[in-house]
Every structure is written in structure tokens, then in C-alpha cells.
Length: 217
Image (cartoon, rainbow, N blue to C red; front, top):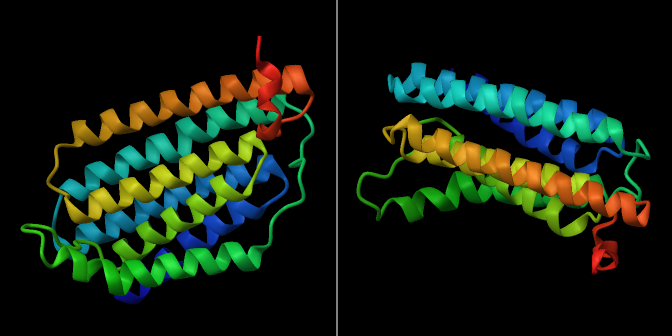
């Protein structure tokens, strides 16, 4: 069981790097959807390992929101926009992978030490903290390093995946309605970012967020 969960955790972080650096944007969206399935599978295995049935609810929420709703929302924008590939050159897989790996190691060895002093906080899914912090690290690099608006939106989606995974791993007994409310907020935020990105593309002819100052007036 532990070896299987470790493989899924590493694959989840690797897919995050692929989402960040894949220049074909529609393919990046499909990879993001696949990552949602991996995170849900990881939580289901964690539920079987820890016998915490609350993780099942988190897995279902992630599966519906991250593997279906958000990918369809972003894919609709990606298909309508042009060009099909990211405008700026893709940043290196090496740096993205290094950031994700550092996050993974920090989550596996550093975060448990911080949680040790928090009453009731514990890692209820093997390698869940590592995968969650690895996703956060990959997401932050995506948001900071890329200028394509759609890639930035995918970075926000990756960041929410990591945050949701960390929340489910550390506090699986939180009512699922709370997690659903957070997910709905993220869906609304992503939709608004896509609306702004579409407006920027209409005015500037590109999805480069550095040209958003042309929207003044």
C-alpha cells in the first residue's frame, strides 16, 4: 500500500510539472484533469489505510471539481483562444522539477516537524503532505514564471489542488461542506480570471499578462 501511494504521490507532482511546462495548452488542461484523478485516488487509498471515511468525501469533491468542472471550464477558453500553444517560450522542466522536488521533500520531512506542535494535526495519508507541498511549489513557480494568462490560471488551479490535498490530509474531519465552499470560490475565481484573460486577448491579440496595462480606459 505504501509503495503504491508513494508512486501516485510522485506521479501527481510530476504531472504538475508537465502541466506547468507543456507548451500545448489543451494538452496541459488534459494533464491537469488527470492530476485531479490522481489526487482523488490518493485520498481514497489514504481512506483505506487510515480508515477515515471523511477522506472519501474529499476525494469525490476533488474528482468532480478538479477532474471535470475546472478542466471543462479552462478547455472551453483554450479552444476559443488563439494561438493553440503558449506564446512565450516554455520555461525549463529542470527548474520546475527542482522546485517541485524541493516542495515534496519539505512536505515529507519538514512539515511533519511543524505539525508536531499543533494539537490534533497529523498526516492521515501517507506522503500526502509531500505531494501537497510539491503541488504548491510547482504551482507557485508556474504563476511567477509564466506570462501566458491561461498558464497562470492553470497555476492557480494547481495551487488549489495542493491546498485542498493538504487540508484533507491534515484535517480530514472538517465538514465536507467547507471544502465544497472553498472549491466553489476557486471555480468562481478561475472563471473571472478567464474573463479577464479573454478581454486582454481581444485588446492586445495575445494572452501575455504583461500587456494588461493596455486595458486601461
